[in-house]
Image (cartoon, rainbow over all chains, first blue to last red; front, side, top):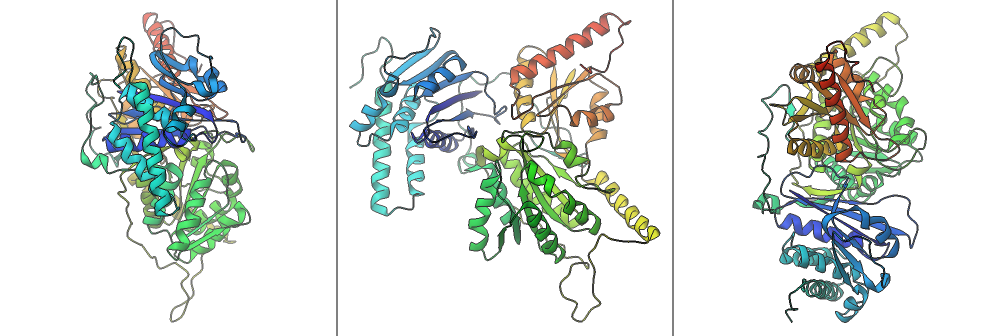
Length: 194
Length: 396
């Protein structure tokens, strides 16, 4: 059993970081995982993406023909990846940059989130990809939220900044992650559990 | 997938046919693994294997290997040199290795071509060294996408002369870590350069690594140039202008290659026990093939995977045995079809051999491979239904 997601958007939005946090969380849950960035010749401000495959046995193909989920953070990513999602899959759209834009698909779950606003409310408007990660994990539950929190702490710990700044970064990451989780909770027909 | 070696026992039992409905958690050993990038894991594995000196020149998609070495080797008081070119790097390696040091060089396809001359000199002079090629698409400068189009170069000799080089091809980052230690072991045991071939995907991807690093025992031979104080001088060279002497050296080399063929063949099998068809693939292509095998099995097609781990020596006897029991073989590569020539030599016409590959940095999808497998099966079934139709060896 394998599950795949592509995180796509502008370089600098933190998508590769969010994918790595998911991959580290999967290891903490005892799962197999594969993370691969698009490493083509991209220019500053161009698109960046990474694929994460999570599974309970050795991961096979690093090339995915049907994603179970796609996180699209900018317009080119929506155009590129909406059609690659398998039927019944999840499309997470960053409304802050995509506005009303949506896919033409009727056979997938489309989750629209104002990632920038949610990130700003939680303390740092740059953490859009962590918000998206929270929403993904909240909606799909491939990994446990605690493992993601541990992964975020670990990754901030690698920063060469001082202890105080490191603590701030961890707090900001965790709070953006929670904001994403909360935003993903309301499912059709269910009242938000506020 | 667990690798076989020297005809060790049968493949590990196939996974249960029914996949669990939800992802289940694993054990604590799996939880303590570390997420590492392929290039960095290969570099750290070399360091842990006791690599004394590294020489390189940056090139995508292996640059992180060199970067890791640039940081770690000086920390440990070992040698790191970013040379002025690939030629500089490989010839520095030749010099360092001649002193008995454990030496590694890495590059990607165009850089490896530049190193061909020195590889021939190392083979000729019996100089141990590990060369990593994180393959990218060619020919020429090509592109930076993943590729396996250096199979001929790696297995049929890079430079001139009658020589061979053991070639190891991991299919995962964890396996790459183990094979780096194996590469140093083989290099010193047989006094030969050894190649480890990955591709852009294995270099750039991150996977859980067990950190089961291994430091092979040092085999400091009586040939290394360690200073001649108190003993007669030694010479490490490939030149011999007396034909009879040079032929003897060549015969010695060929004897060595026969030994390697006898003892160092490594391969892996998956779901071949009841297979009617086999896919042969290595490295990244083998992982795509593994997914295609799983999908084919869901559709009732009995197919298994045969994965060479040593590209030279090629597991020809083992593949020949497989070819006696299947109706057809599909070879999948990230190339126009290079290893497929060795597959056909091993199969010797016992069954049709078809090929599917992509080039230019593209990787086939599992569905694409499944399609090629169905085409092969259709051809085989049509030929069986009409005996007048002799198979053409699947050379489509």
